[in-house]
Image 1 (spheres, helix red, strand yellow):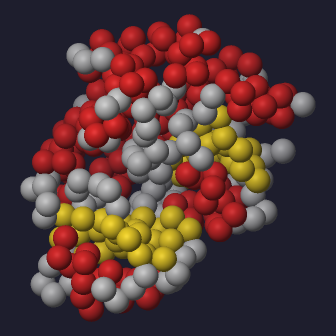
Image 2: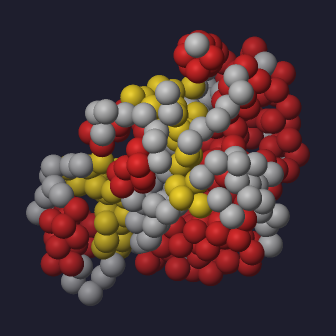
Length: 305
């Protein structure tokens, strides 16, 4: 069985995330302690108890999701020798993928995504940007509708999640104009991610990324922006920079994993958002997830069998 790992992005956070791992595994406590020390606040308590509106803040959600994903990966690695053919992460999840492949130290990643979240939030004043999921339209139709309704503002496809599910991003009024001509709904996010409006965040992140101690990856990492399979340390900073202002090409990224021989993906971290998309992307690729002790045992048994 050729398997690959996928790592969730922002939106998968929820109070209680990681609690089962914390109650059962010392490793989970150690990683949360490392995250708390690195960040200077109690990320563990925020994950366990919320409040939800605080956990949902971009600069809290990003390190929270990365930490729980890393715990899930390392607990699985304790039970089974892991040899994924490829790994991928949705937006923020690309950092989790780099930690899992040994390309970026965990503490550096936690610190970086916290800063990334702040820069992304500060790039556009609250209320001026928005994102919306557009349902039942193909990518060409969504792109054409965005161009038609822009009206001098920014509105662009931001996430190609699966056939018939494309997220758009941009100025709030322009996003509303597109919604007036399409079936969809606004997303509960506080900034227009993966759009040109994130240019200030990209500019702020450039020196941060260039200063990180990247290493070559143990397995190919599928880039969000280009879907290229990356392994060299020098390839990661430009990839992570590019994805801030350009669309997450998740559906074609999964196709790239399948092209590398992946017949099953395992989602590592809280929730089942990405594994749930698999039926719409490629039914021939099986999906599983590791988010608590029960699912950890199930996947470990399947991989060792």
